Length: 107
Length: 115
Image (cartoon, rainbow over all chains, first blue to last red):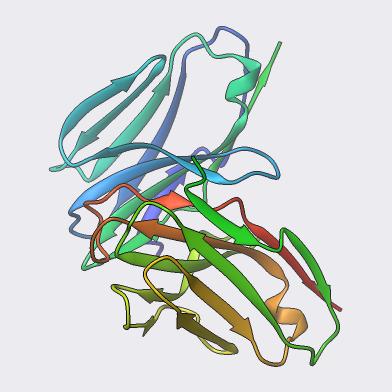
């Protein structure tokens, strides 16, 4: 069983839609990270959180420590949001990565 | 504003050849990492360096060696490349020792093909 599970694996949305990507984990964590990877590009950190909620522009990340679950929301999605979104958890001194959610936003 | 810089971006090797992937960060970070990314799998840690002068194995170290040359630079060497090492390699750094409580910064990736 993977320690970090993301859903869905693939997601196609129309421009303007509200998007939710989920991450569940099975280990004790010190923090949870959401990362963004554009096709052929590098990986960028979007959020690091250990409780509650964070917001940057149209992106919102929430975490429920008791339920071991986090969500990444994108409001008013845009084609430039098309990317792979990766959840990673810090546990026992290391980062454990999910396999990513590939998001495609159509105009 | 370079952040983490890794070279080369693309490389094709023949089985048995050796090569070194270079990585440098200009953020004065203590910890540096090498990951590989394969289709259908999450990023997997090859080696990391918690601080200058130290290196430790990660999840998939076989076939690789590393050198923390100084605080800025962390190189990954393939001594005898194998097709199974075809992958995308990412260098990363964090301000403090490995763990989840620091923002992680990644390089742009190196696409390596072994034929």
